Length: 166
Image 1 (cartoon, rainbow, N blue to C red):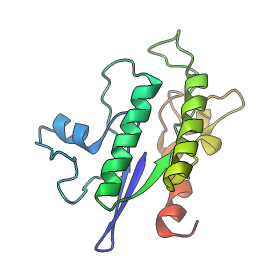
Image 2: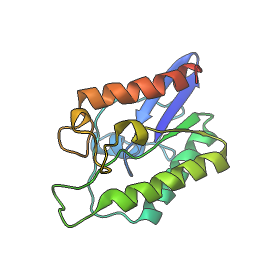
Image 3: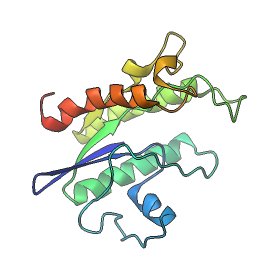
């Protein structure tokens, strides 16, 4: 999920993968979060890699987390852009898991949810996916996470949306 905050001509971009929220980032950093996680004014560094791996997450858990973050953002007058889940054909740390149907299903849900909530959805998946639903090798070093070129591609997709050119 990407959150765009416009306050006093400020744009804050938060890239969140799966359940990592601003609240979790602050807890990992040892800071005490507010109940909303925004402390009245969102602050976050763009494109900062943050991961909290707490084990398997159900599709419904993912949806619940996205819905909660959108609700909190909207309650704080933050414009939300939902970003699609990047492609992945395998997880090296869990070779028996096939993420392709999971990613496809949740990306369909994200698009539908964004439309229902009248928020924009950023389609990273289409630009990053290869012929076999894998992350294009030139854009990822491990097939799951974007590398420098992958983030550059994502940036080219989202910047027009942030500046209102899309």
